[in-house]
Length: 518
Image (cartoon, rainbow, N blue to C red):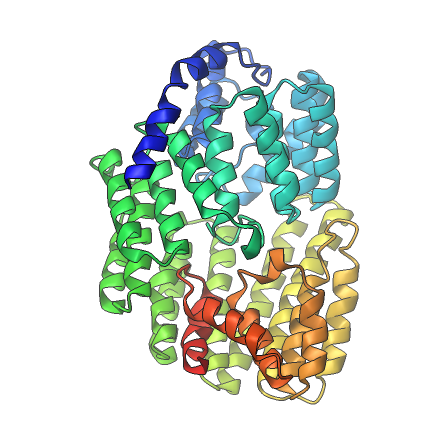
């Protein structure tokens, strides 16, 4: 830790320079008739950059109350917004985009393309062009980096952060986010392949970010992830506790405090203390708005997967499904999150060798997806939007159906794979990585059928970016390699899966299996 303190001290001398730079930074121009709304929107944007994004929902409500025609603000989604309301806001912003500055107009177009038309490739091009036209606006590069992330391109994402740091070496969001390329964060954040991750660099970036904003708990919180990446759970716990101290007393609803408790729960999970982990997870959920709870609720239940107690997992997921169903939330949100719980029940049945239970869950999920599509039909969605959503729903259901058929040895797996391939090919124009799912399940089907070479061929096609943190498919890839005689590579992958300290459903399903293989 002494080295880290020296680095932090060295970086802190640049803080004054960073403050001067911030005064000269060009910010995205905003079009509104309310000075107060403008001030609040600047706060919203800063919060999103600086690990305070969950403070934004009430601010966004107030902004649109002050100026109902603040079109740029309507591109921001919020915990307090129903999905249908957000789509209405975004459609309204898109229809009125000629009434704002050129920069706002293009951002509205990009957001519309990604969220409404599900076309991230086009959204990315729009923002790339905007960055070329307005190179001095760091916020455009942050938006661009987010789109590169959604396109699974950590290299282009890193370039954007490097460009920001070239303009301002003490940009907190660039330092903070660039560090996260080197260790897992969550399922939405793309990372470098494992062999290209540099935890020492990540540490120095986080410490520099901390020197820029000493009271921000974010850098300490993510230093905990760095230590977990080094399998140093003791230091990870210390970093998370330091982050909690920086936060101080939590509010009644406090996502950041909840998130730190979640991280402490992960430390206990990977220490094998599942009961203690569940207590921390349950405590973390108490500080969340109900709309945030379904995602976090999964983590205490995943601990039962490590213990192979699938019956208890099903009981827990069923209880949360009932709580969601009887809540006073909007129906679209309820359908989305009931589907999530039922998907976890389905996966529990799969790995508990209960084909009848899996079939029942799959039927219910298919019904939920029909309801989701019907809600779009009644909300005025265009034909193109409906076709894109239907194809994505078909892909989702086909994946689950295929997973089940592979596990239970159905005779039609090859036909199911071909159908998945056809559905995914329709998405290639919007998602250049669309075929990854096909190759993962083709490899999985091959290993379950005893064809190691075919499994290796399919898994080898997948980039390390998309494979390294997928512990589930990495495990089966390792088994295929071992079967083909490549014990060195197989053992390296199995060791990585066995020593993983980042909580995902896939990791929970196979980590104990990997440990038994070593």
